[in-house]
Image 1: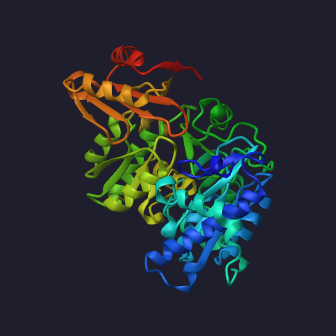
Image 2: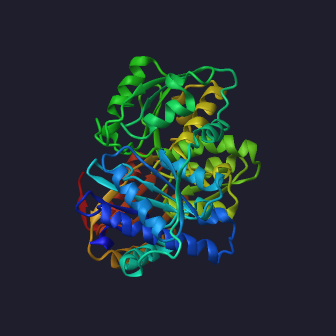
Image 3: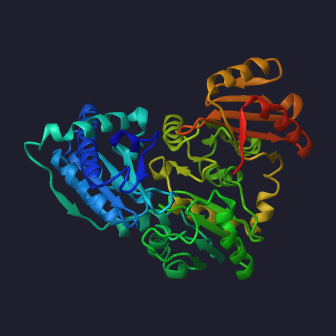
Amino acid sequence: MLGRAFKAYDIRGIYPDLLDEKMAWQIGAGVGRFLIEDATAAGETTPMMRNIVVGEDMRKSSPSLKQRLIDGITISGAHVIDIGLCDTPMIYFAVNYLDCAGGVMTTASHNPPQYNGFKVSKRNAKPVGEVSGLADVRKYAAMAEKNGKAATPGRMEKRDLWEPYIEHVRSFLGLGGKSVKVVIDASNGMAGTMIPKVFGRGGADVDGLEIIELNFHNKKGEFVHEPNPLVAANLEQLRARVVEENADLGICFDGDADRCVIVDEQGGIVGCDHLTALLCKHFLSENPGGAVVYDLRSSKAVEEEIAKNGGVPIRSRVGHVFMKQVLAAEGACFGGELSGHFYFADNFNADSGAIAMATILSVVANTNRKVSTLIKPIARYVQSGEINFENEEQDEALELLHEEYADRGEIDDLDGVTIDCFKKEGWWCNIRKSNTEPLLRLNVEAKNEKKLAKIVEEISPKLGIRVEH
């Protein structure tokens, strides 16, 4: 049963059926062994490289799972620094600030309250996914009871890192003497703890900032709405409140506050790719000629806006593991993903909902324009959104698409199949496999609605049975 909780990017399952305290202990032992081995193999020999940072979200099962995780880590001989209740990006900060071997966040992110899990990072807060270490963690966790205790078990200490974390996040905030009114939906998650600490209750610690708080009450993992801002239904409360309060914009966070989605002053939902295109100008003004990384499903407008502002557009595979790798490899200053993850070179190439918020507020304040008017020229093409298809023969379907469209446009296999007929026919699309289900995911963009509808109708029958949500 241990292996069923291990996913492509993290460890996650329903508590206590697929993830319980015994498994948390095993996972802790596996994580401790892996992270120490990883640091040693890299030649890291400083005392801090035996330390692992641990934190937890607000779910009912998080305290007990975190405690058993800690017990397992110390059994492996590694030391634990427990920073308590925090957002996931605070773990990334702590690993770098304290120069540790890695970190583990106890969270199930945007999943319903019955779920929990662990997000693992190694040195420099680099993500640990299936191909970058989780397979080893799973193997070591399964062996934990046989191996027994380390000759010298590790120790555990608690640390309060809020003061340096606040300073770090607010270094990205500059309102330029302007005022901004924002409604923030914390989704009853960790943003409800993080936002008041970083920006003050109601924004009181930042001159010119007014925050209207929505769903900030920590309900111990029970949510007024699902803590997933990518689902439009979960934004209804926020959209209505922004209009009601005559606010400049609204921001909705997911459960562990590493992702966010914004709505404009009219309550309109802003696509995360369009937001990436808007923010790239800000970062390229500070890093002329720099690279900006974007999720390959993003609008053509993202690539165009990066180039227009003197930057180098870099496409990436979908997923935070790949985005962070590309950001580091290309020395990029900024990156954005359709999922609402935004990545920053000055944040150790890691994603942060808090820093995304600080940057968005800075751009809105300093442009002195309505969010809708900033986004309108960027949202110049029409998009299908992600359409899912059940298909048990995914590889065969992708191969056939590759053959059929080879003569119509440019095709690449960076992540699934991308068919680019934008120059010739005014459309492009990406079809990729789900990491967790027998599904193919289709995203199409075109220059007009008529062309979009035609291409969706043309390609859909080739992908399987459409799944309606």
